[in-house]
Image (cartoon, rainbow, N blue to C red; front, side, top):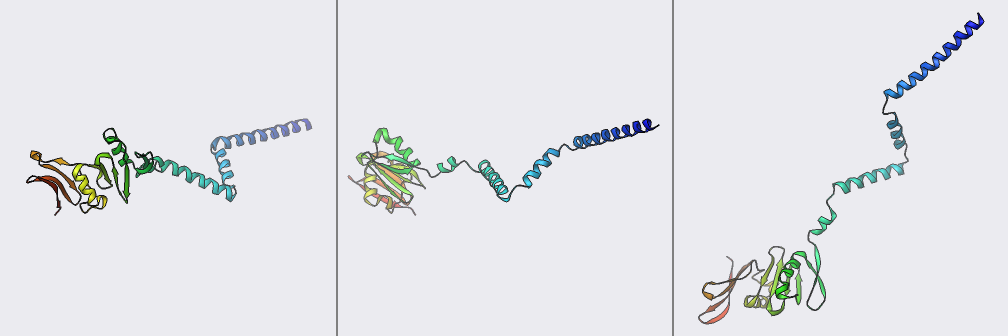
Length: 201
């Protein structure tokens, strides 16, 4: 009788252990986020200094992914080096440098580059010029019109900056060039060559 009771008690104890193990496994299987919760608790228990570093790292990552390409931003309004005929270099806008390179095979390197505010004037041999401004871009000025315009102030001339290359007038009567504040012509007037300017109305 005593042996039978002991056997029943042992079986009951073993059954309780099996039930407890089964319950633990069931709880683990029904909660797939158990490991995640543990990791989240670790992040929540981080020191204030560690938490602050995590926030800054996240902000930096968002800035890199959402911000503009620094190289693209820098490209706008870019200044580049330009060599002059005497071997020196100066900083000019990339737009003006591109225009100088287009003329280099015919005009050579500029002898002098004058810059004032948002305007620049590259002087070449034989009285040729490239005038540049943010408004007009780079425009060639040559011959007698260039000679007259530069004598009247060039970048500070009342006519302003050239807006297009000069054109030859009909009948070989001279040349005309448009400026921001007017028009300049070099014409043959009754056998005499000279400059005529007409301000814009």
